[in-house]
Length: 196
Image (tube, rainbow, N blue to C red; front, side):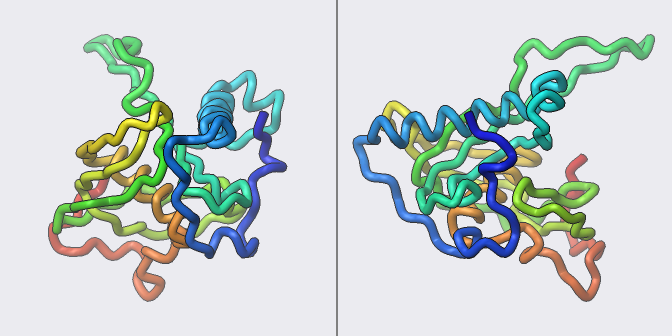
């Protein structure tokens, strides 16, 4: 089981290195790695498990963050509950907006329009706040292999697009704050979407 102690922190060289494609067909080792990464995200989003294990909440994890130069990422984005007219929360029909282990993921096309998360981004490998908009593509098309070794192609927008770009960046040695304009961190570029 992956814990916060397994996640390397800012300054560790692997975070700035480009990961290698995993070999297909996938090895049992790589399949298990992806499953453990997804389980970590599940645990980090469960308040009881997160407190018990001392986990910070996360929606994505890349193998680079475990010190492994493999193009393996896991993404787990929960659906938010809706609120009725009386202010009561209605549980979502589907628990997750996105739940995927991706091998050799790459962005194959993207929108011209930019987007950023309203309050900026964070990272399990960065133990400090880095204020500013992390400017990314608003929409992306991503190709990857799933754990069954099937080639997939998906189109993403809004928060899922941002999350997957964050994790793919890790596999390319790029940190989220590399996308922040340090001269004007909260600059909103023309046409940029702010994702809540």
